[in-house]
Length: 357
Image (cartoon, rainbow, N blue to C red; front, side, top):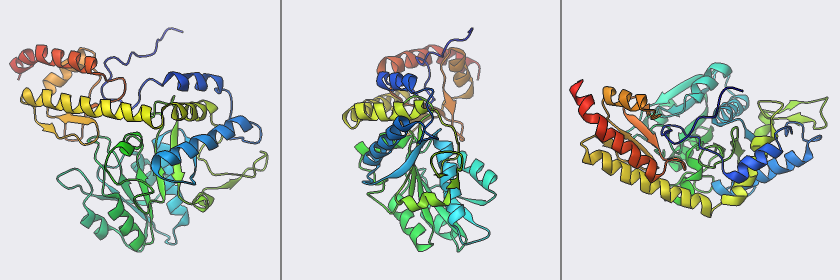
């Protein structure tokens, strides 16, 4: 094999990170198992039950139902599919914030339903008044984001739950990235805080599991009945997942790393990320860049395009928001040493970049 895995030393924009050693070991041992066939691969199925139980502890749900998906995209599509299949309307719609992940666009396309996109307020959270206006008798689900991809913002989940209840719609919370940092904040975002019906939370992001390991949880097991299909040639009678065959690697790694790190290991990760975000935001402000005040540990700043491209040419993997700001995600591999090196390159390149403007 010619290729080698990419080094994470200069990866600042990804919401994935090298897996924890226990996650890597578990993934390798269960690589060839298939939790999609639990009658045959009972150990993998048991590990999935354990992973779901641990996710329930993270998100405030004492008796969770769910499964380990391929990632947040699959989980979000499944949540929308669940809402559509339960809807009474023949023309259902789903109301999402402008900050919603692009997987909801995919869900609307695949499932042939209307996506109503509510604008954001000045603090990058969803405008509740707009959500209320967009909901009607055909609304199957309301979506809130708990840790937005661009700015790490948390929508007002309890209020969204009230709106969903008023419209007899499901409330789905996308906490794919934020779910493993939010337990250590004062935000109200989970099943224990609001009438959340379903939630996306990804162990392969801040949870440090091996890819792929997403998660979809539901408050009531009956919600998954809307997804179930008969599986006559398997030992299990029905299947509610989107994919059939699934590698046990993600399942085993998710269970292993959560047993190892929940809660104190994740608390330490969050505190490091929070402190690094504050330090980095201050460093950018001191250099006269406009910075979006971080909430959860993502830092976005107005860095000129020419300087951004020079940083990319130096090997820094940074990305841009829809408003063209540079975006840095404080994943576990983004240490203070890494940020020091980035700021040093920023200082070195700024005069050159400024001359080119």
